[in-house]
Image (tube, rainbow, N blue to C red):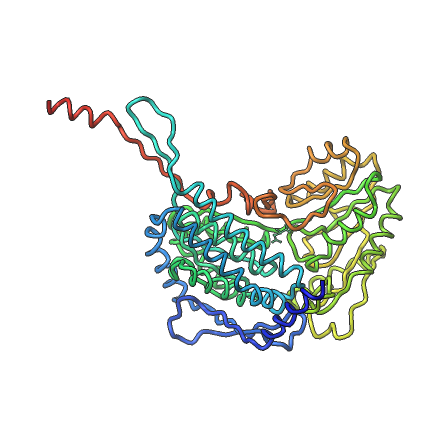
Length: 508
Ligand code: UN1
């Protein structure tokens, strides 16, 4: 309804001139290095400035976080829940700023920006409830008469939370919210591309009453992340990003002195969808276009390789290309845009290199033409490429590129084996109205999230906990019932309850 949407756009336009700053929560007063943050869709437009965290500021931040952690843990689940819920309320009150930053700093469309804020608020409220559910009362364990056994969950210490640019708000806040709910304190390093939205999120958490020492922002690039994770005082690392970086963090933690640290990693995917000849073409078209091209394909859940059964291949591909041709590519600050930019020039050139290599292979490649002025930003033309097998792809292509493969009914088992053989295990989609095919594929798919007759992105907190296996991550699933507990340590207290009675007898 334009009557509702127009005032929102006007409100967002009023924030256009605001210059945002991200700086470390603990600032020494020394001069740190600064970098401008520009719009991905218009590299000449500056949104704000990132002030990087200096080495000794990292050290001091961890010292402060460690000093306050026992008190934060003793506060208990109920009080921590109230603070996280107060933060959720403040996030909702600051909708305009968050939407504006999602668009301008991260190049998100308005739809994606709204979903991102919704998910951030859902994470805060869900993990607050988990704090109440699991961190308020101990579990009384069964035991012999005369003994009481109690199990309780506690924070492990200081958690490092390192988050990606593709969910600069939802994942940036979701992981720390879980760590805080569990009684840890947090040092958070947002992606170097999107520190501004993280800075606003942290500021609102402090305003909600979460102590500054308990949740600190440490902006910077990979060197700051390395400095944090190599500190032996870090009890755990929660990382979302590439598989390679997760493996490097894992090696670093293993080589480090100090307590054995926990690693919770949510990484990449090579996500496939299988479409058979019983699928509904209109539904497939809608779901394929959304899964591959929404968010410019910059979701780890996004569809990368579409397997279409040969007897419907040409017709199905023709319809999907129709949906693809109808996408509006352009400025994400305009309401009509479906596909915005990719995050930065490096992302653009690596995607372009992939398309160029595939074009040389001589197989059909369909590309959209970009709008006028696209060169001012990091736009990659949405692309569909025919290939023979998912195993032809050597890496995850994190952008608006869909690969299609033709398969025959007799090949179904091999198709699933190939998909599993990538080693990734994040999302898989299936479109089929044949119950036997559905049961067959479901039983063999080694993925964390399997989607049937729908799109395969946009997992919902609590209803659809999200996360993969193998090269795609360690689990547990974000937004699921086991997530917060993985940030915790368990303690058991055993009491001999006959002791008091025994004393009484002696005294008598
Ligand atoms: C990511 O892209 O890093 O289901 C993970 C989804 C999102 C994916 C988040 N929850 O599309």
